[in-house]
Image 1 (cartoon, rainbow, N blue to C red):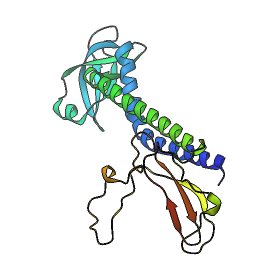
Image 2: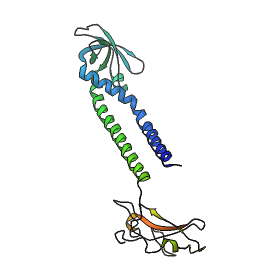
Image 3: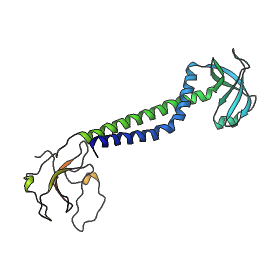
Image 4: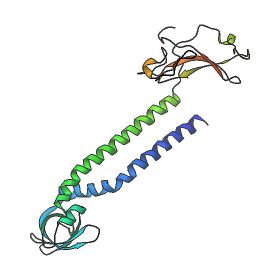
Amino acid sequence: MTLRSKLLALWLALGALTAVIVVPLWGPMHVAWRCYWLHANGVREQAEVVEKLENARFALRITEGPHTDQACTADTSLAIFEATQRGQVLEVVYLDWKPGECELASTIEASAGLLFSISGVVGLLLVGMLVLGLFLTRSFTRSAHPQRRMEVDPREVRCPACGKRMDEGYLPLLSGIHWRKLGDPIGLPHALRGLAGTVGWRRRPRLHAFRCVPCEIVTFQHGDPLRR
């Protein structure tokens, strides 16, 4: 796979992951933004509950203002729907040019918090995906070398099993390599007890190494990367 193909696959995967996370939030976001728009630009009036409809919806009649006796419908939560009776007067919010489409003022106020919460979550997800994508892109494209080289002639390094010349390279690490003598218990390996120079906190260690592909043997040097 070429570098271009790897980068394309990386960004497609991140895009798909972002869509999987963001798409389910689109419905609540749409409702919240609509409520926020009504809150900023709508008219507040009192309305009487005329009928309780299916799917937690009210049929209401505006009882004051320039649109008195205008009918409108509003969605609400199941809890408010069950606690409200016909004939009860509730405060509604609607656009002056669309009095037939209203929302309960209580729903508007609750949606404001929902809007900012979901917007914050979506924003953090998008920023996180972007940062992750840039970090991974850099790791794919930035040329790197071992932080410390063995003082050997690469042409003279031979496999201890077959005696053939070994390929030169490096091992990128993160959480450390753990060493046990024969017979020692495994214990609980963790980064704090990794071999010197194999644990990365700020920078990933890159150990100079030689590899024999047929024998599946790798020889590397660990230790203080500041030493040369």
